Amino acid sequence: MKEYILLFRHENVNGKVSPEQIQVWMKQQMEWVNSIAAKNQFVSGTGLLFDDAKVVSHKKNVTNGPFGDIKETLGGYITVLANSADEAAEFAKAAPILQGEGNTVEVREISKHN
Image (cartoon, rainbow, N blue to C red):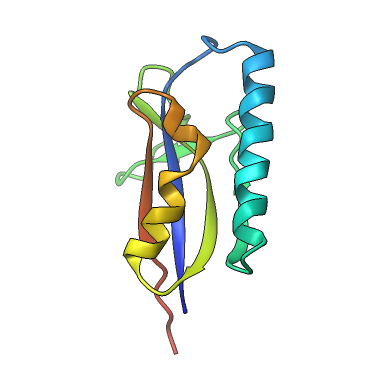
C-alpha cells in the first residue's frame, strides 16, 4: 500500500461557528478517523492551530496568518494507507468536514525518496 495525505480545507468561518458545533464536528472527526484505524489504514494526522501562524512569501516577508479575509483555510490532515488515490478518495468522501458548503479534502500521494 501507498501513503496518501488527506488535506482538510474549509471555508473561513472566522467566529461564525459556535463552540458547541465545533465539539460536534470534533466528535464526528474522531469517529471517522477511528473507522479508518479499525481497518489498519490510519497512519497519522492532526489539526492545525491558527493562534500563532505565520505566512512567508516568496520575497521572504513574514506576516501573521492565516489571514481573516482568505476564502479557505487549511485546518488539518491525516495520512492513510491505500492501494490507490481512488481508494484514499473513498475515505475522504466520508470526512465530516465535507458537511460544510465549500469545504474540500485534497488527496495526494506522499512521495517516497530513497
